[in-house]
Image 1: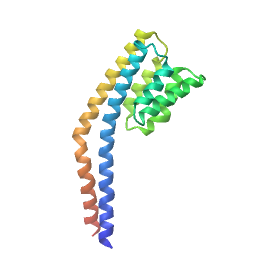
Image 2: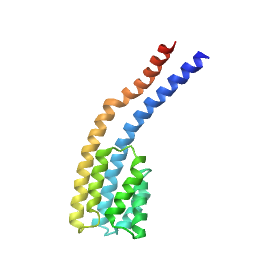
Image 3: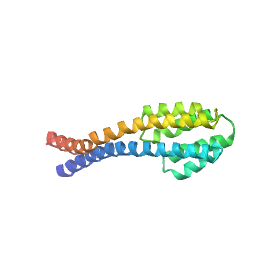
Image 4: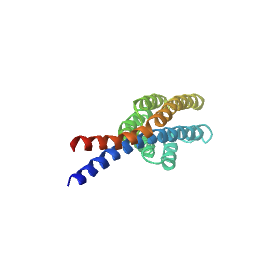
Length: 170
């Protein structure tokens, strides 16, 4: 019976270590996706002269979850026509952000980006998109560094913590 308990403890702590490691990988992947989404948005606005609602719908179809939900929610709120683009973006961020692996720094960047959505002409909007991408690139660099530094450690720490707990209980 003790062995079953020991195995369960080790499996649980190992799983938590791998989950922490996965979150580090997901953050990097989602930041990369967010940058690509902004590049696509820039192209839609600048070269396709696509309305913001339509561009958001297209982006939601191109991205994987949970970031696709962000643009899908944004498009739905714009289609309802009850609020400005800034308000729709802010509410979409609030609804979807907790489902992402992204952190507060990225949330602030995206909130600042939302302040400019739909308020300026194409050229100024393009500048704000590029500025946001520069900020996201900086965050991505930090995320990659953290992933390289801590990913393997998180996995090992999960296993070793389980072994330590089992040894202390025996």
